Image 1 (cartoon, one colour):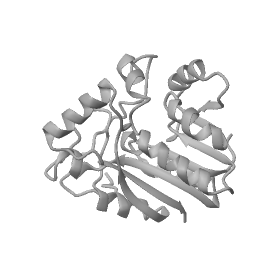
Image 2 (cartoon, one colour; image 1 turned 135 degrees about the vertical axis):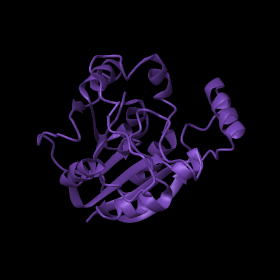
Image 3 (spheres, helix red, strand yellow; image 1 turned 60 degrees about the vertical axis):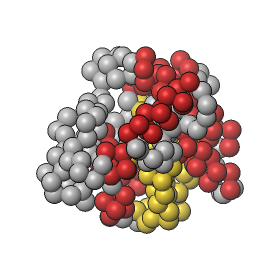
Length: 232
C-alpha cells in the first residue's frame, strides 16, 4: 500500500467508514449538530480569498456535507455548487432548498461537472482510501489559475508525534504538516500552508465544551492544516 508520504510506521485503515449504506448511518444527529461548527475557519479563509479575488465567479465545494457553511459564507459572493455522497445531499437540499447541490463519488466520479474558479475540499481527504483520486478529481475540474483549498487535521498536534493510527474509525489516515505538504506537492503548486482553528471560534455552550476538551488534552486550537494551491 502507498504511504502517501506518511511515515512508514503508520497504519492506514482499509475501509472508508464515511460511506453510508443506509441513510443516517454517518449523518446522525450528532453530526447534524457539529456540521455548522466544525471547519468553520477554513470556510472563512475561503470566503476571504473569494472576496479579494474578483476573478472568482464559480466555486465548487467537494465534500460539502450539509452545506451550512457553504451557504452562509460563500454563496453570497459567487455561484456555488456543493457535492457529496447522495445521503448528505438529500439532507442538504432539505435544509437549503435554493442552493445548488449534486451527488458524486470522488473515488469513482462521473464527468458531468465543468470547471471552476475556486475549489475547496475541507476535511475530506483523510476519509478516503485513495486520496490520489480526490486530487485527480479536483484537478480535472480546475482551470490553470483555479485556486484550491484543501484541509485536514494536523496529526502531530491533534494526536501526538507517536500516533501511528487514527483512533477515529472514519479517518483512513492523517498527516502531519510536513507529510501533507510533501504529498500535495506531488499534485499541486502550493501557495500557502497554514494552521487554522478546527471549529468555529465563539462562546456558545458547544464552543466552551470544545475549548475545555482541547485544553485538558493539551491540544492547540489551531490543529486544522489548510493548503491553498493551484493545479500543476
